Image (cartoon, one colour):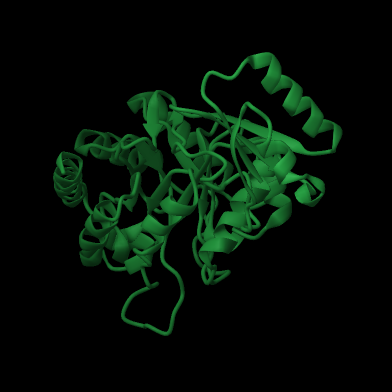
Length: 335
């Protein structure tokens, strides 16, 4: 249930209403918008008399919410959430880029790529230390050593780092990571999501291999229900019958998610297409659809990358994507 409070309401009256709701075992999330205050009610709201609340002089309107996700619902938080990570803001109309290799391979590799992508316009450095691979014989990442190399690259470039967590037991290793990524395979690892809800770090949540948008939002709800509202959603393509691409990029998910939720929404065209030449057109389509950010895999030697080389761009190719994407966003903002 959502209660919209009239602008200029006396704080004492508002506090009295909130205390009354608390007495009925209702959790109240308060959101201050540009023109009004929104109270999101979570719990068994079936016992609440809507007519009684609507009759209060301070209340503008009351609406029951049918969707199962409450914290992530835009009705609870009409203004889009802006997440500040080391001075870089995601959401609120900005367009930011996360770039780097699929996997950290060596100190020279990650620091060189970090410098190149920063020069090309990236605000965040992405890189895998722990790698979930379909084959148990494939390169699994440098693990804890890879995390240290990401921190080294951050120290040299000043870029916040984004990397994927695979298991709850690794959480302590991520204490100094700027954004913790939950990959597609872990989108419904609910024990992991609940624990991430208790930490004070931005969480980048990727859509599962065959997950619906509602399932993605419910996974975000798991994190937010634990108290962590700093969630970033990522559309990275879903598995369909199509074999020409690694996944099928669901560009329609971007405007629909932004309609349903106040959380920032970014896109990962590298995993969606799985082929380097598809990354730019998919990235540009995501920007045109309203994405708040783009995550792209960039490697200094894609042909010899230890992981996902076929979908990685070179630094010059990435720079071209950034330039063209910003041109599209500028046209959209002008309109």
